[in-house]
Amino acid sequence: MEHDHIATAPTETATRARTRRAILDAAVTVLSANHGASLADVAEAAGVGRTTVHRYFAERSDLVAALGADVRERLQEATVRARVDEGPAPKALERLCLEYFELGDRLMLLFDVPQFLSWAGFEEETDSDRVLVRLIERGQAEGTVDAEADAEWLQNVLWSLLYAAWMQARDYGTPRHTALTSCLHTVRKAMAAS
Image (cartoon, rainbow, N blue to C red):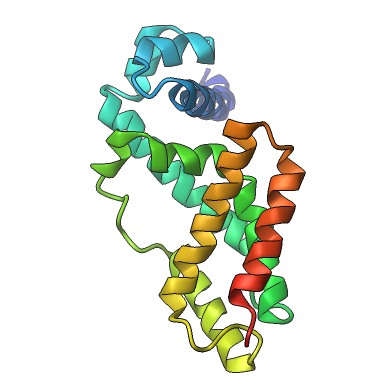
């Protein structure tokens, strides 16, 4: 009997993780379309009962915090995938933009939904933020990124251009690849050494 318990524990953990992921993914979709959506709306989109959502996230603020943490984790993973220490800084910045662009739905949610402004983690500097600033500074030292502009300014420019690309795709129906191409072109021009 003890052996059966050991065999089922990992399955229950995997099931809980899948359910939690389904709820978070549904929350992104639902809250992106309707910022005031209820936890019941999220539950319906996730294909689970309202009580299941409440077991994972007792209050809306718990869901908001979990979404914020999920975005931070995904940003960190995207930063690692971009291999920012390889090659010239401008190429690494392009790879980083490509990775971050894929997180558009989640990041737009952070910027667009008012509840995230009161989330404790919203204003905290992350490892990804520090990596981006160091990458810009590396490019400035190499002479491949505009050294006259402040690194934090260029960081904000990059985020603004990504936001514009996400909005262009979402709100104006521009194909995603076209919005991304425009973003990358503008990032190159904005950051180029003079």
